[in-house]
Length: 111
Length: 114
Image (cartoon, rainbow over all chains, first blue to last red; front, top):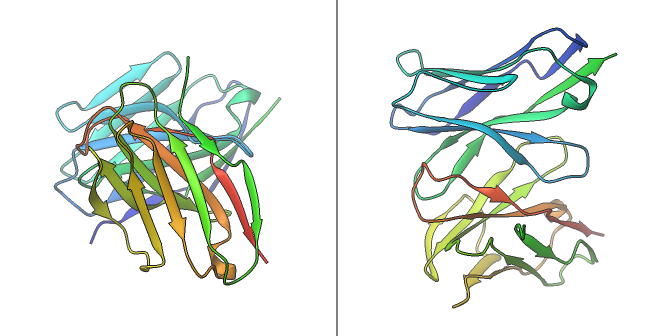
C-alpha cells in the first residue's frame, strides 16, 4: 500500500549549516511530492513541491530533489536560520487530493 | 489574503457526544479535504470532497462523516466520540481535484475528548 518513510526524526544543526531530510515511498504511481513546515501550534505550511517530471526544484535557500527510480525525495535547506526551526513533513499525492504524510522531522537550528 | 478558515479553534467534548467542525476554503477553491493529526504524528487523510461529492475516504470508521455545501464550505461530523478522537483536525483546500494540485491547510480545530 501507500507508505512514506521519513528520516531523520530529529535533526539538530548550527545556524548557517545545511539540513537534509529524506523520504522514501512505495507507490510508483505517485507523481506529486510536497513538503510542509509546521511550527508549534500552527498549520502545516506548503514550502515547496515537485512533480514527477522534474528532478530538482529550488526556491531561495530551499531545494527538493526527486529520484523516481529509487523512489526517494529529499529536502535541502542551506544557510539555516533559527526561524527554520520547526517540524517538516514530506508527503506524496495518493490520488484524488489525498496526501500521505511522513512521520515528520523536528529540525532545531541553534544560534 | 483570505486563506482557509476553520471553526471552532478549540473544542472540549465528552465521550459519546457528537461534534461538528467547519471549514471555509480559499476563494475559488472547489476541493476540500479533511485530515486528523494526532500529537507527534503527520496528518492522516479522512475525506476529500469536490463539487459537493465525496471523492475519497481514508481508513476511518463510519462515525466520521462530512459534507460540502454549494459555496464549497464543508463540515466534518464525528459521532459517538472516543478518547482516541482527540486530535487536531485540519481542513485543506485545493483549486481542483487531482493528486498534483497544491493543498493549503487551515489553522485546525483542536478537539479534546474527556
